[in-house]
Image (cartoon, rainbow, N blue to C red; front, side, top):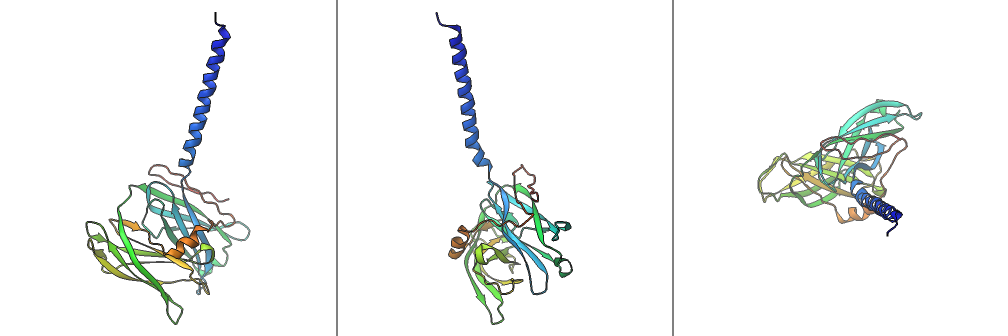
Amino acid sequence: MIPTNFFKLKGGFFLVKSYLLAILAFCIIIPTASAEVFVKNDQKFMDSSDSMHIVGEIQNDLQSALNQVKLDITLYNSEGKIIDKKTTKSLVNTIMPTMRSPFNLVIPPIQSQDVDSYSIDLDYNIIVPKSQVIDVVSSEISQDRFNNYVINGKITNNGETTANAISVVATMYGDGGKVIAVSKDNIEPDYLRADHAIPFILPVHDLKERQTIKDYSIVAESEEYAAVPEFPIGSMILLAGSVSSYIVLTRYSGKAIANCICAANPK
């Protein structure tokens, strides 16, 4: 005759085993949920007109595309008190998975002198990814005798239909991969037929005084199509070793909620 406590022990064994399997499955699932949308390579600087710029990049590590990306930036003085709250937008309209977009908030001189630090909240919509067919096939950055930078290049439409409302966005990087300037311009004419190419000229404004451009990246997009990222070789080497920057009182985080928002709380 089999002892009655044998079944109790056996049942307990399977119960513990089930818990272990559940914990193991949970641990496997967790890393896939860690993807987020966050700010990197950001900083603030004063330009020649004494306006303050808060620049950086929005990184999309989700599996979905983003649009209507908005940054709510809270400004603090040296005592940690809130001075003002301002809003700016991503310069790239559709941020595809694994891609990033620059942003640039300009604070006028009358207020910039009181700003000591800032925090950023992110808000965005999750959308179905677009076809990535607007490609930057060439680019070259040059400097004139007045130390003004200009980027010349060419984009092509690898899609099957005409692309409309085309824009080109450039991000310039300095020491440590920090963003030091951004530029955006619309291409004229503002359409590009399928399998055609068009040149562009992109001026670089508001560059930090005495700051040298170490590298840059360019993306181009249209109303119908998303960008194919174009990174010069040096950019990949430079940015690979960079660390996301955080400023006092600033913390960034992001969580995906279907067709909803992502927000970060100041530290």
